[in-house]
Amino acid sequence: MQALGRHLLLELFDCDAEAINSLDTVKASMVEAAKRAQATIVDVVFHEFNPFGISGVVVIAESHLAIHTWPEYRYAAVDVFSCGEVLQPQVAADYLMEQFGACRASVVELQRGIFINAPGPIHHKPMAVRG
Amino acid sequence: MQALGRHLLLELFDCDAEAINSLDTVKASMVEAAKRAQATIVDVVFHEFNPFGISGVVVIAESHLAIHTWPEYRYAAVDVFSCGEVLQPQVAADYLMEQFGACRASVVELQRGIFINAPGPIHHKPMAVRG
Image (cartoon, rainbow over all chains, first blue to last red; front, side, top):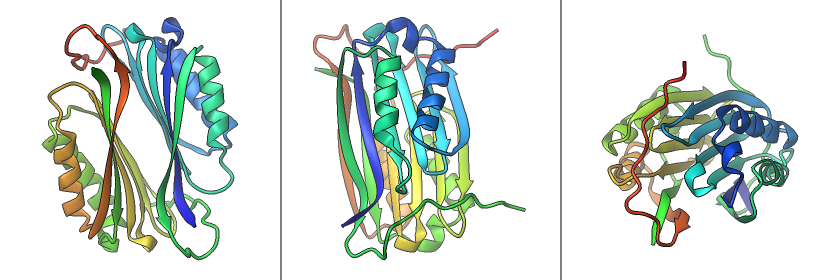
């Protein structure tokens, strides 16, 4: 059995409200999580909401990491979607839980795109250069 | 019971390989799906991989839409993460299934961040403007 993607869905409760309300902290933590998971960062997009909350995505060659925070609930929803065999999504998950000071959490792992008898290991592909 | 986020996870099988291998088609379809779902688009980031495959994220004020395609498997993994009560994630899901010509699909809906006795409806917040 071979899944094209591994998707970790993190529910982070009772986080440090200040940490998850800081654009700089959230962005830096997500970028560092991607690096620690051995991801190749392609693009980083983060936004701050009014009066609180951060949303952001780190696009990686191996898929993406996404986060949405609700500091007023001390809650953050994080997704770590990866493909290939090099990336270590759990490393990113562990790091983010620690950085955001989550006291309670759940992690659901989904296998995305399962193909029976797929032809060998599926590695991530290099970016195409256009034009 | 009140969930801060609704997350649709789409597995699209037996898609039109040409459609999901075209950066322009995938990007335009995702942007249109976001619009049809009544989302407010904040940022659009798409990349093409070599020899095939598209990855992309539409960051919306109400969270995000993400896609990763494997044209060689005629497969696409799509996420529609939304918050607030205006956005209609199922409309985006239906549109994308049709656009990519998926013959088989599964849709899993997750409620993210459930808070019992949350204080009233939770609407999405406006973007913050940074000095």
